[in-house]
Image (cartoon, rainbow, N blue to C red):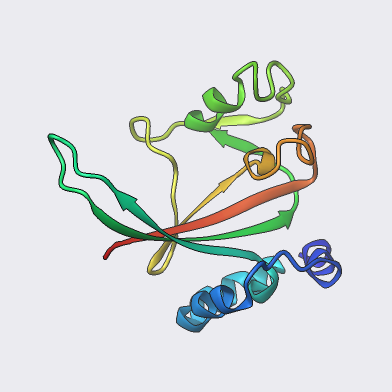
Length: 154
């Protein structure tokens, strides 16, 4: 936790403070306590929002979708992986055969991405490779990426 606090003291990943404020303003007391317990400063995390136009096609009616993401880095390392991630991270183009042998594999229901219940938000924890493949190209990079995604039809 202390290393993560220091990470946010030294870095501001926020690209648009207003978007961060929109997330933080709806956080519950429990959600605020979660971020505090892991050392993340939500006002300095990366939050984005976009509106996507979905075109009509033969099967689905199009429309607009409002998408918000909230990504936060934490200092640490993985001790276990859900089987869903082990398969993904074992892809030769991602990490190949460099996954540490000590990582345990946990079974998940079907082929669903594991979600962590953060109240009204569902969070996922993953390797930050997908955020920045050049900066986080090594498996043991020292960081875990948490991500919250919300969508709403407009």
